[in-house]
Length: 137
Length: 401
Image (cartoon, rainbow over all chains, first blue to last red; front, side, top):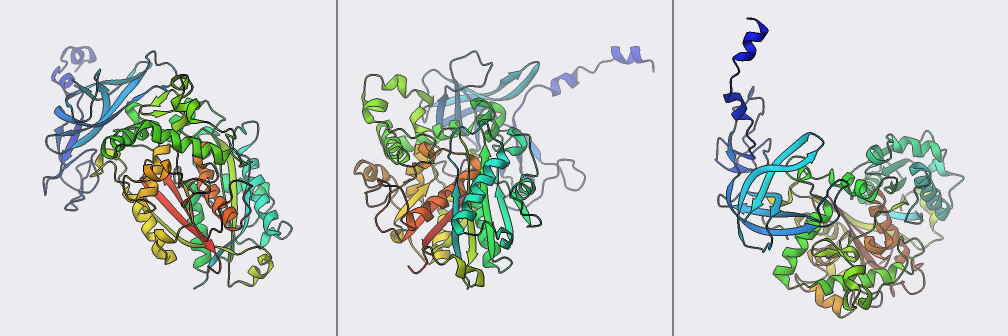
C-alpha cells in the first residue's frame, strides 16, 4: 500500500486511547486495588508482569470522581518559570479506599472536605505536558 | 561479642562551601577525624572507608566519589565504597561501618559523609532531593519534601492541637544551640518576638509550605563529617585509649512505603518507630535510659514527631515538653544540642554522620560552653531518609556505662 493512502485511513479511535487517565490496578487473584502499580500484590503475592509475557496482565481502574481531602499544603517556593504565587497539593481518599497525591484546586481547602478528582495537565515544560490528578471542588 | 568504639571525629563548617570541591571538603573532615584519633601518619591501618553522599552524580556531576576520596587523602589501596540512601546516607554508612567491625571483617573503619548542595540554585537543590519521591505519582506533580512536610504538619496540628507557635519555639531553641556551635550553618539566635509574636513576624518568617514557614525549615547546606570506628577487642584499640571511650551501643534501621499516601495513617512514622525499637533492642536500652537526642528536624515538625515516635514523649505531648523547656540543653531531655538540621544545616549525605559526631562530642563532654549536656550517658540519633521511608537510628554510650 502506498504511504499516502495509508495516511488517509487514520484510525481515529487510536486518538481516544490517548485521553488522559490516571489508573490504578486490580490484583487478578484477590481483587486488591493498588496505586501506583506494584510488581507483586502485598496481600496475596500475585506477581504483575507489565509485558504480559509471563504472567497475566492486571486490569486497570481509573482514579476519578468523588474523594475526601485527608491533608493539604500551599507551597510558595516554586521552581523558576512558574508565574503564579503558589501551588496547592493534597492527599485524598477515594470511596474504594485508594489514596493518591495530586494538585489541589480549591480556594478554601479544609481537611475532610469532599472533592472531585479529574485527570488534567499538572505540569508544562516547554511543549511537554504532564498529565495527572487534579482535585477540584 | 566485640564492641565498636568511635575513636576519632572530624567535621567541617556547614554552610556555603561552593567555592570548594566536594571531595576536598570530605577529605578535610576525614583528615580531622584521623588527627583527632592520632593516626594521620599511620592512616593505612584503616581497613575500609564507607563514604556517604546523595547527589554528587546529579548536582556536582561527579561519580566514583569514594575512590576519589581515597586518592585525595593518599590512602590507596584501602577499600572504599559509596553509600547512597537519600538523606539517611550518612547514618547508613555508619551502620555499614558498624556491621563491618562487628562482623570481624574489619578492625578499623572510616565513615565520611559529605554533600555540596549550594553548587546549584536553591530550587535545583530542592528539586534534586525531590527525585527520591515516586517519579510517576509524586514527583511529576511538582511535589517536594517541603510539600510533604507541610501536609504532615497540617494533619498533625488537626489531630494533636499543635500550633504554629509551638513550631516557632522549636526554631528558637535550635537557633540558640546553633549559635554556640562553631560548625553550624546559621549561628544567629532568633526570638519569638522576631519570628512569631512581633508585628513583622509575618514578613520575616513567611510561609514556604503551609503551615511551615521559613523558620520551620532547615537551610540548604554544604559540609562533611567523619568518624573512625574501632573494635574494642582489637590490639589497635590500645592506641586510642587516651581518650574517653565512646561506643556505638546500638543501631537499627527500617523502611516504609515509597508513596506517603499508601501509609495506613499518614502521621504514623513506622520506619522511625521500628528503627528505634531495633536500636534499643540492639543496645539493651529503653527510651528512659536516653540522656539526649539528635533528631532529623529538616522541618521542625519532625523533631516533635520523631521524639514521640522513639518514645521520648507520649504521642501529642512533645509540645508540652517544648513549652516547659525540657528539650533545651539544660532541660530533662535535650534535643538537637548541635542546633539540629534547622540551625546546624543539612548537607544531606553528611547529616547522619554529623549527628553521631555530636553524640560523641557530648558524651566526651567536649561540647562548647552553653551547649554541653550535664553528665550524658546515652545519646540517640535519628537520620530520616525520604519522607520517612528509610530511617536509621544510632545509639552511642560511654564505654563503661
